[in-house]
Image (cartoon, rainbow, N blue to C red; front, side, top):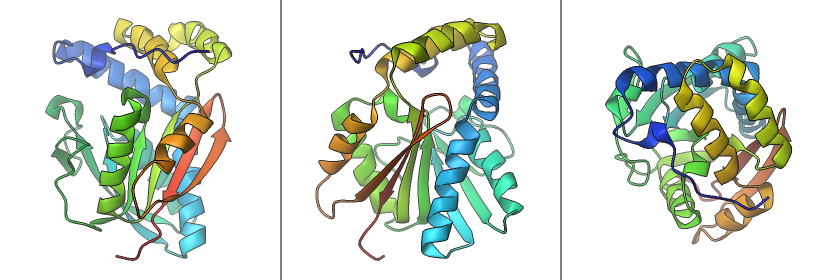
Length: 226
């Protein structure tokens, strides 16, 4: 299945605020029900196990309502792992009131080197073209102390069919249009690996795992010490 870079309505500044809010709430449900939260939780568990760290600061990029990292954090708390999460999004209205949040560009993170243990994103990588994704990875590695986590979709014809089948649980037309566009512009694991391998020194060590319903989890380990 060829990758097709189709613009998504939620990315547009012209998306009506009410539709944006409804679509973001759709994404919260989809992430809870269909593997998004589980994927991020497993990635963080892997980092905690490998590093021995039980308290981790996390920058959640393109966070929207921040539901993925927050819900994963509540689940991880039962395993003795504590997350301190900061949300970042380029659109202020996408950020949920009450969360610690920053409005900024993901490709120019407004933080010093090694500001967070982890930089994480969910359903963001497919919004970026390969050169942009490599640029984001460089920025995220600069800001992180330990690793960068990427939770995203896997492009596949069956996945596209599942999105059509899932229209019934989507309350916003934006979610339906963007859901199809997201699968069409998503990467496959080999493509992600190739893009991340192009990042200049210090080159990260990359682990990629497959998860429920065409989810992909990526850990780009930062080899240099902060």
